[in-house]
Image (cartoon, rainbow, N blue to C red; front, side, top):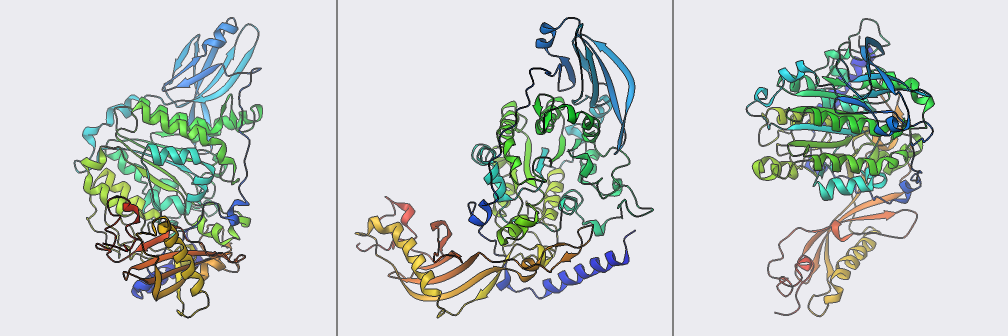
Amino acid sequence: MFTVEDEVLKNERVVLMEKAIFAEDNKFVCKQPVLPINSPEMMKFVKEVPKISCLNTDNPDWVLCEDSECFIKDSINSMMDGVKCKFTDLKRVSDHNVRDAHEYHISEDKYKLRNSDVVKIQCNSNSNEWSSIKTAIRADPEILQRTGWNYTPKNGLKMNVLMFGLDSVSRNTFIRKLPLSYKYLVDVLGAHVLEGYNIVGDGTPQALTPILTGFTELELPDVRKRYLNTQYVDVYPFIWYDYSKNGYVTAFFEDLPSTGTYTYRLNGFKKQPTDHYMRPYYLASNSYYSKWKRLCDGEIPRHKVMLNHIKNFFSVYKEKPKFLFGFHGELSHDDYNLVGIADEDIVDFFRDLNESGALNNTILIVMADHGHRFADIRNTLQGKLEERMPFFSFRFPPWFKTTHKDLYDTFVSNLHVLTTPFDIHSTLHDILEKTSPIKGNLSNRSLSLFSSISETRTCANAYIEPHWCACLDWDDLNPNDEVVPLLIKAFLDTVNGYTNENRDICAELTVSDVMSVTKLKANDKLMKFKQTSDRDGFAPNLSGSTKVLTEMYQIKVKTTPGDGIYEASITHPVTTNDYNLKLSDVSRINMYGDQARCIVDTQPNLRKYCYCLHD
């Protein structure tokens, strides 16, 4: 049962959001922070971690499992005489126990999974023995019979959904620690990263539950294990239930059974939540960890078990509609840098899916729940902002861009606006069955990314509490403020420096009018946020005090000749005299007409910044 304190918190949230929405002013439109990838404030936490090697020539794996079969390796049969293996299916009893299914099979070559995705294997030869826990995807006849594209909604997109998430990885962390994966995902696969994505609560359950159910924990039945007479998590309206009812094969894969999203603090599932579920495997294999090298499952890195399982799932159900949510935490939950060891394996995973054709009719969603939450990172302003801005990306097959051009164009138009986990939930519903309007209504908390979302959306519109809001506040500065000449110099140095090699035809610009100057800062409640003060992550502790190491300004000026109007975002590290501006952060916001006629054909990149000296 939710306590009186929980109800008070819930009511306070509703009142807070309603007040904020009714007091809405376009001045407070969300301005996302520009967070440098190589910021010294964050790079001090970044370290290289040696790769792991799981190969063990003294005790190699005897058996491999792929798709729906496990088989004795040829190399083992050639090395040893009389190899025989006993395979025992392991069945889920609950979210905390597995048991032997008491179906033993002796084989000299292979074993086809029959009643479970998890099998205990015990092998002997004339001179040696080996045992392990392995997993693959059983081809369940009942699942095969009740699934198919003919059962999916007529107005759905009729596409597979593959969601793969990493714990505690901000957008910038993904780029820093998984550069190869990021490059392949974006440059080769053409994925789009949500640059305005903002979390709505503290920790993994508060991040994933709105995605998977469309609600916060306070809005759902109480499933906390420390209270009597609470329910199992089955009562939550998980999105995979909707997919399952409409002909999809479903899967939920998550490692770290001791700290599972719905089992650590919550009661877990009474019934298995999806057709395929990795928790029984992780429960069973945990007892073998001590005999293997660190972070290894026999002779392969442990993170590859889930990656391989996803590939097997797509292979076994190749012709069926599929919905899979996978979430990996072992490498990234407790360590900022360790996830980097998986970079090459994740690239291989993406490449294998692509080259196998698995992505031809699949929406691939690569994401994280939130950024890192450790105290030392949380004590920096950029660390706090990155925590609120996890990595979130969508990749559509190339044909989608033309077949569903309107949906695709609308999605792309939403990449830079404020979005939340609630929006992801609506988007997943639209993939299954398109029902959202063309234009999103800002009075709704949950807006599909296939509906146009206004750039005027704020954290209040999106029901994001102030201490979780990464949008920056705006302080108007007097044009006579002592910092303004320094900002003007940074602007002119950047723009004129870009046209300097063409000074014989492009005029050197000067500022004729400072139209506005604003200083961007994180809101006071975010700055004061230290941690959540309750076990469930509902109530904020606002006793912190975060030092600001980088100031951010936005300046709007008119230039001469030509009366060009520009906006520029400039950063200032407070420990230096530097005012930094990238050309990509300069926007010309009025038309330049024929002012750039002298270079329009030869150097079109200069059009916004060149005022031609001669006809």
